[in-house]
Image 1 (cartoon, rainbow, N blue to C red):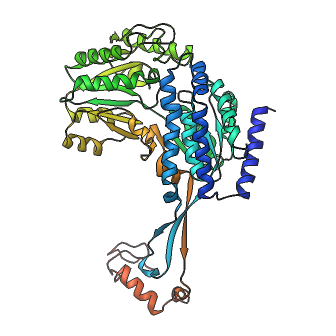
Image 2: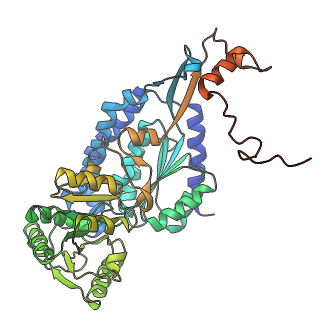
Length: 485
């Protein structure tokens, strides 16, 4: 018996029993847990920096504090300020037929939520869903990536200080343990990762009809309009490619620029990167690729692009796994960088002739997690928002919609399903229970058999109208002769 898998099963049973014993935590209880989590993150922030840095082999301390520590604190703050309103039953209208009765929706905790977190932002993408789960009154089990063992160990120790294991539990392990985790009979699963793995998680969850929230990434475009400030757009796209060394599900995957301006824009991006990172070798502000395998893949993508005629501009030096941004022009559809989510410091630049061409290019590909638009006027922007789909959008910047916690965070189509953050996250991990209450003297019995009374006949006349004699009846079209016999 695998000891980690055995512990997962025992923990799920313990959490399910604890939930049944206390199925609806009060507002005060939920707030107490969220406040305790905030205190914990502040107290452990330096240890978090050390653990994540060790797992990456070089992670910017500022980026770790900004995303891994501040991100969950901001989300908890938003839940704390909104939770009373979210938990309040929502009054709904009855049909006119049921006037004087009442109807409302109660948001009920689902039970035990399984959270599967990736390696690129291990705490933000574990604790973000955890905040939503706790706000909704659930218990949670968290499966961390095999690529973040030190962060996993630290997170387990941290959360163990404030939560018993029958409330929140953390698990490490390799692929075998991840597969077993996704097969457990949770009440909901939140998975963040690649579309390929997301399909396996969804298939495993379907065995028990477990609902899933999938945040999957994809090739998020950055569309630069003809009238955009190229220097400003280049700076923001360069930052999106440089943060965490481009290992971000929301990173701009490629840029779409007006035909003829690709070289000017490529140089602008390179210059913006150099201003942020005069050197990448040994630069503690610049994050390393998470493993030798990931760094090797970047080299393979560049080699493939060059072999197929792409022009590569290096925006800086680099050594080992700290790879400076590469900008590629002359991109062809058969290049790997045009087909695969890059998830690293490579920016392909595609060109377009008109806004319609750019929209057609985006719509011909799987729907992305993010869409970033620079320099369009209000009319063009309105058209683009209506005609394209993406999990979320940032205008004149990249990715920051995900850091505003009153907005939902999630994908669409190939980039995911469902949302967390904000009220959408609370509702995603709650059961919206419809409640109807009959007024004591309401004469619903008038609709009971035997039928034919005046009230049902008047109701049907009001809502259905008079029957049309020319309408098909008994499977016969109008004018069709009755068959003999």
